[in-house]
Image 1 (spheres, rainbow, N blue to C red):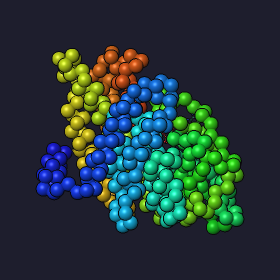
Image 2: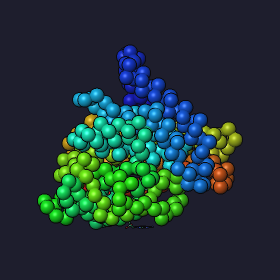
Image 3: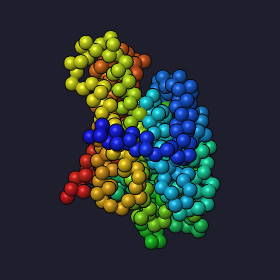
Image 4: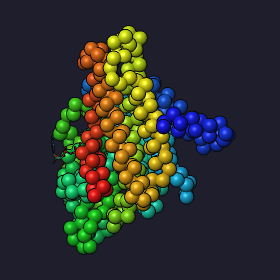
Amino acid sequence: MAEIALSAHAALSEACAPSAAHLATTAQLAEIRHIVHTDLVPLVGTIDADGTYPEAVLRALGGAGAYSAHVGGAAGTMPDLWTAIEAMSIAGEHCLSTAFCMWCQDALGWYIHASDNEELKADLGQRVARGEALGGTALSNPMKAFYGIERMRLKGRRVDGGYEVKGLLPWVSNLGPDHYFGAIFEVENGAGGHVMAVLDCSAPGMKITQNDNFVALDGTRTFAVQVRDVFVPDKMLLADPLDAYLQRIRAGFILLQAGMAFGLIRGCVKLMQQVKGSLGHVNQYLEKQPEDFEVLLAQLETVVEELCRTPFSKDPAYFRKVVEARLAAGEASVEAAHYAMLHQGARGYVAQGAAQRRLREAYFVAIVTPATKQLRKMLAEIES
Ligand SMILES: Cc1cc2nc3c(=O)[nH]c(=O)nc-3n(C[C@H](O)[C@H](O)[C@H](O)COP(=O)(O)OP(=O)(O)OC[C@H]3O[C@@H](n4cnc5c(N)ncnc54)[C@H](O)[C@@H]3O)c2cc1C
């Protein structure tokens, strides 16, 4: 199926002369690849072992356009989520911490871009798209809360000129003292309901602390966030009320995560291929070969690229496909990393071995919200 889709894609490419936009995208991706090879690859071991946050790399990637494709389009044009996914996967092929920070940044830009807050779009939105302002997203808790998995952790009160927000979030990534993140809070007074806003880590009452060390992804500046009666001005609001806006952002939020999965799977295929010469005589007996994952990856890419064309679709069948694709990407990540480990053998099991790192990283794709279990719950509810 993937081969047919891919050859059709190639025929289409030959028939059409490349547009200026396509050439610009190709040049941007080449620049991103260059930054990843020169600046990120030498850091990967340190990011994993010491939890180093690759801030300079993240900013350089922003300068090269990694966070702008899905938010920078001219008025009326469709956001290009696919290019954002490709950019993320280039980093994810080597380091999932960096790819996840890119997703956090992309999600923040996505929220701002999808809002009606023109002032925020023109200022912070542009700085986020260029990687000058960094940040992330605190939507795991509300995403789970809206599916009945846990309770809302942030509460807000309408006050003069904005909201006063309080609560505690256990894990928000890609943060720092001058960073921002998108968050949803439940309104306790007035009309009630939920509101989404961008929160500023430097606002009075905000406190970020590193409470946990993780088995991987420690270079992502994942902090606990205490929000103590923080004033969130109206100019930072993304949606009030939330419902229609949430539907607008949810497919993009999920689809963008494919960049982490695709990069990781590609990296695992390379690890399997790397040992073909020396261990192929015995690795051939393993149930899955690198070629199997190449086919699986091409199939997933074809599906996600297609879904990226209509991120604002309100069709329930479309959203179901998004959820299915996300589930498949998480499961393929874990399976590819498992087989990379089996193919690499002892050289992948040493402390500096890439295969054991990829295996630890891969589970993150399957547990970050929406986690495998939540995706299965969502599908079960769609069924019923
Ligand atoms: C490295 C990392 C980065 C993350 N970055 C973000 C982010 O940027 N934004 C965001 O919104 N979410 C973030 N999360 C949260 C993530 O998206 C998931 O919500 C989380 O992994 C749990 O998802 P789950 O559905 O498997 O829930 P489960 O693990 O099944 O349940 C989660 C709940 O269990 C409880 N719990 C379990 N273990 C602990 C523990 N050790 N300490 C405290 N509470 C615990 C908490 O109540 C928590 O809400 C991050 C998680 C990790 C591990």
